[in-house]
Image (tube, rainbow, N blue to C red; front, top):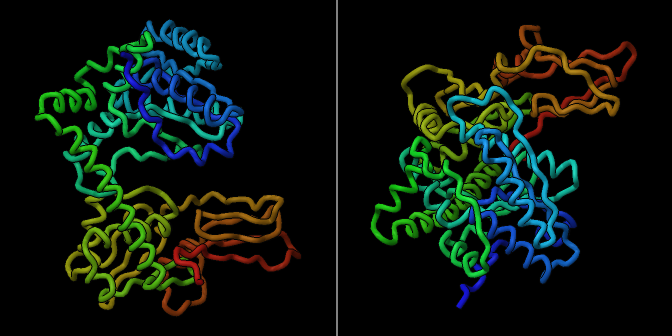
Length: 400
């Protein structure tokens, strides 16, 4: 008796407003199952939905072109259009090849979706992928955000990524495909132990029964914990963060010191991400170090992280932009007369005005604002006769 179709379990409410979505299909068992399950789901639940099958040829194996062509034939058999995308970068990277190939793959598919009006991309990550991801991350971090692993709904360059098979085991997909007589392609790189994921997969295979399931459950519980930390950190920021329109915020030591470390790290990540101009996402260990520094009395009075500059005072600490990290080249105000400068200040000025950091220019003293913060503010030069410009700092905790 053929195996029952695996559950297509993601929340597809976001799809109901879409007319066109894409499927990432490499030809492996997981993605071929995704293609067939998505086609079945669309026919039953959303007949007007257009599904496009995307396959990326990374140019790393001579067999890849023929394999992509085979995916195209399988897609055509069930009435789906297939598109081949090629990673043409040369020379190919020697180190970090999987990470670079992944970034290239998603970049190519996201660009295709934008150009063709596809509103989302579906990928075939399974519960096995989730367990492997958590095992790999356990060796590096205990952060709930990281251990939450692969999320059912994600994004890439603004494109929604949906993972409808995240609760399904790979073997269930293979059993179903075998019952249909549907073949798939086994990528030899899946057996190459140079890659961390392959090593994690083999490690899991040698562990006691149920380990993979427990790791997947850990991801789900970590996602709940991460969401709770996110809500608590946003609430704390809204109630306790003191912000100044010059682009600086103050944190009272007493309010901050008594919080659990995980919450302090999450709050710092949000503050640094905002005040640092979105430069980079700090690592968990970096956040832990700065959280200890902010609550202590040892070490330097100032430090930098993620494009932000932090200064410690007796009553707490302040955070502002690291002025040296702001590009000195002038930014031109467009015809609209509006410009988001350094991801922090909304500028309204005459078209053609130039905006640069204040840097070493002398400004009148501003009470409660150290010179470091003033240096990171925008300096606006307008055409003669233009009305005065307006510069508004985008606060992290907007007034209600």
